[in-house]
Amino acid sequence: SEMITADLVDLDLSAETKEAAARALAERMAALGRVTDLAGFLADVATREAQMPTGLDGGIGIPHCRSAHVSEPTLAFGRSAAGIDFGAADGPADLIFLIAAPAGADDAHLTILSALARQLMNAEFTAALRSAADTATAAALIRGDVTPQQAAAAQTEAAPPSGEAASGSAQTSPADDAAPAEAGAPNAAPAPSEAPAPKDTTGPATADPTPEHPFRIVAVTSCPTGIAHTYMAAESLENAGREAGVELVVETQGSAGFTRLDPALIAAADGVILAHDVPVRDKDRFAGKPTVDVGVKAGINRPGELIAEVRQKATRGETTAPAAAGTPVERTGEPGEGYGTKLRKWLMSGVSYMVPFVAAGGLLIAIGFALGGYKVNKAPSVMDHFVWTQTDSWAALMFQIGGVAFAFLVPVLAGYIAYGIADRPGLVPGFVGGSIALTINAGFLGGLAAGLISGAVVTAIQRVRIPQALRGIMPVVVIPLISSAVVGFLMFVVIGKPIATAQKGMTDWLSGLSGANAVLLGALLGLMMCFDLGG
Image (cartoon, rainbow, N blue to C red):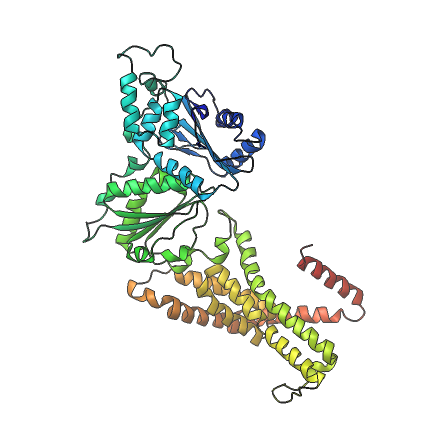
């Protein structure tokens, strides 16, 4: 069925707030059976609005959400004479689009919605909507059944002589359409200069001398819902790129999925623009390029500035180091997380990789004790003595394999804490620092310290500006060499001994509880197990 019909258009939207506007348009959807629970749907709209205001420069409001209370993808449109505040920087919106997508909307419907979002960056399209005289014309425009030029021609033919009001109709005529601007609604006039995309693109074309080939930019856009802003930012950037005389290709990471940019395009690109409010997928692809990293609304409202900025960075030789691509922990995090949350995730990154070694090693050791008794730890190496038919030999084998697995615990812990902070470059110093912690008997405390130090050292090295000729060897030679040396020095000479002393003190204290304080030891072990299991 059609996603928008004349019944879903209100050309005289009288709401004064964005909540009232959303309710008025949602009631039209509910009347057609496309919204099954009005209150639940409006709650989902409000939740989405709380994530980020949906007002856009140029007098557009585009509240939208995915909701389990939507039976089929639906779009409602309202036109407000007074304007409604949707949080845009340049004032209230007079064109309001309410997009309702089912929780399981398929790619085809989402593609249609993304096409509409791109159209909103077209000044002729928005001007035609502002001058549409009836709901059927507005719905046909939005569906794409008529072009803005066809709608304008029909409107001109039907318009009354200049100075006369259209009689017998409550709809807005071309003469009436000027009223919002006269009433103080700055975004109501349909002048092309008010379109978001081209309004700030006058400078980029002269940002630097014209090279032998056009300046090449690759971009990624994404937003929390992936229905509207993702595609509007893409259209805005592409329009600005054409005006600035640059080659600009956009990868939209929206709800309808995304097609990755050709690696050859990325390799040939002179700069990168990332306009996103959710983590960019496969961000590592753009490491080593001049990069501008902003929110998705910046891509909609000031694309020309972003193009100018990335060109300036390219002129200065500013590029992103591999760490700027985002660590594994940051890819799963939320924007604006505090340091404490990040620290917890870094530590849990190390623990999560260590746990399989604990499970495998611990169970093998337990099997060894079960088969061979408590003295199995005194058995000779199975390399020197192993009898296929003896249970004790198999017990010793299980015990010794488990011991080898346990030997990886601290290095893996340290290595993957560093990995969580600095990505792959942090692995080498992290494993080296963890092994040193074992060598000096610093144990798990030493592993924690080594992992955090390794991540910090690698991050610091990556922030140093490096000549272009050396960037290729940084991840495989320079960073592992310098970071391992620094971490090794700190662990052996500076902090290793104090940490080893603290580790020994804690171990001795726990060992001392096994006698008269056995009850306290049992309670402590029980609390540890409960905490470890999440309680």
